[in-house]
Image (cartoon, rainbow, N blue to C red; front, side, top):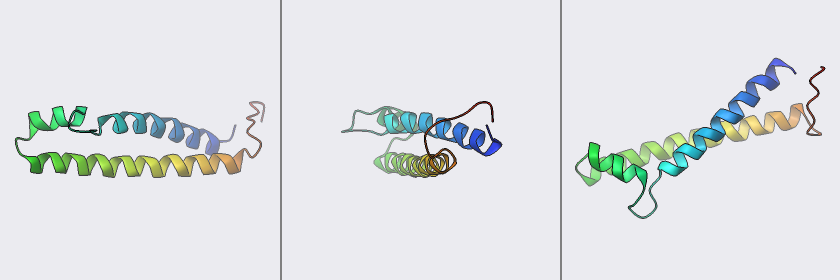
Length: 86
């Protein structure tokens, strides 16, 4: 397996795990984990919106890393097979 494939495989796995975590941190209708964290850290609604904006930014960056890693791996392994002997 080439070093390029190893790097992008690790990036794909880490960004996937990060996406799961940060998507779960987003609040749905005021009952999310981020609301509990934000209410304990910030006392105002302005603090909550700052936390949500930061969560959105991190999630967008993780989505971009995930998609780029996926596309690179699709180009490196077009048939979906990884031969460990190479």
